[in-house]
View 1: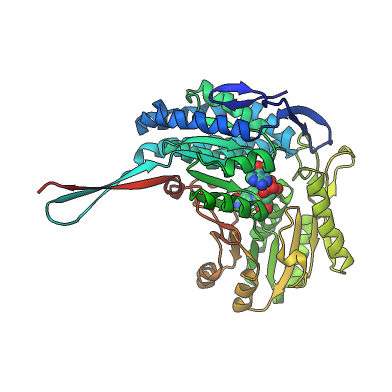
View 2: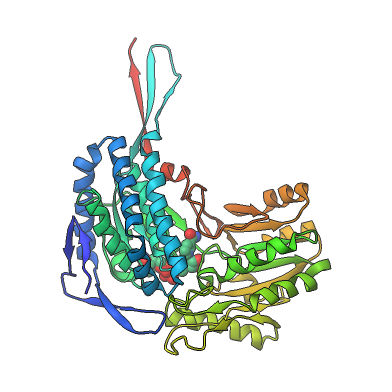
Length: 477
Ligand code: NAD
């Protein structure tokens, strides 16, 4: 039975309610977390405010940075334990979980090192005046994260906020709160003062909604679905606070006839099966020039058929999906595409000895998928790849831009001019050229265009999102 972390103390929910923690690998409940709500969110926001007004807010940037770097080191020192927790909670292969913990550490290292390198400016103005632009923390920042990469998401959103001197309240996803809770212990032992990171566990519509609407917060970072992102933005608007939204995606892999096939195929397969397709940046659309469509897609199908799905300990290409609702959703997309007569070109294999009670789905490659099919436009958030042909560069760009989303894209061609032209024409927050980077890349500013959201996380740009400026105008004669 776990507890929440508020103001440096471990607490149950005031009313004693809990949520079962279920392993996606076998469907069994193996722990409980508190079901916090408005009361606990109040406490957490008050604790964060106190810390931000107090010692934490006054700490020199160098000292703040040092603490964050120490937290990164402490995460690495506890990497295996955290990875085991993460793998059990999410069902992902243990190697993936280990990498996720490394990325968590990397966020604290990166932003810890950056904390004392963000400067204000001076601005030339009227004679006899001195103008300085100070960069300041926002105050109390709220962070609501999803279940697909719990540890990475924590690092991505909390580390830059702390680096800029904010105090934080985190609402992890109800399915995956365990790594955040263990992280809080590790961070505290590494020197993070009480109240600087508060973790309220609970349901989205209770704890999450209470946090988003809380008048005491100064900023919201939300990563998750479009539906909830809209609610969060409405709540932010009511309190006139800024929010960064990282929402869904339907990212295209745009493959031209002069592609380096050997290089592209394994990367393309990995970009959709990684994390069982539950990656906002999953490369879920395979757009291939018509002249090579059959041969190239056949090569992808060959590799796709080798994909194996299993438990974390089996450490295959991917694990189960997160929960029964997600399983039903992904299976529905697969069933509807089959029923519509869209050809299945390849399927991965679920390990015969994977528990029958787990939430396993067969990775599936469909093609050619009609451009108006649900599979071509909607985010499945599962290991389902939709292959579609295009005619020429202009058609490729129109097809790539033809969904509501604009998160990531990749262009595959040996023609340097075409790489640049297409990359510039595609609407996305990141474009990879002859490579792909779902996840990772702590240094690389990341975020959406269109319905994929707004604002930027990762890289140094994230520090601007979680801070504000104050202009000082001094008449000195
Ligand atoms: P979700 O929106 O259901 O939940 C995300 C978080 O919001 C959870 O912590 C949940 O408890 C909370 N929440 C739910 N209802 C809420 C409410 N009414 N008010 C406030 N908070 C609430 O999303 P999910 O199912 O956990 O994640 C899947 C979605 O997230 C996919 O659409 C995926 O593309 C997206 N995602 C985006 C990124 C990105 O960086 N762009 C990363 C990961 C996931």
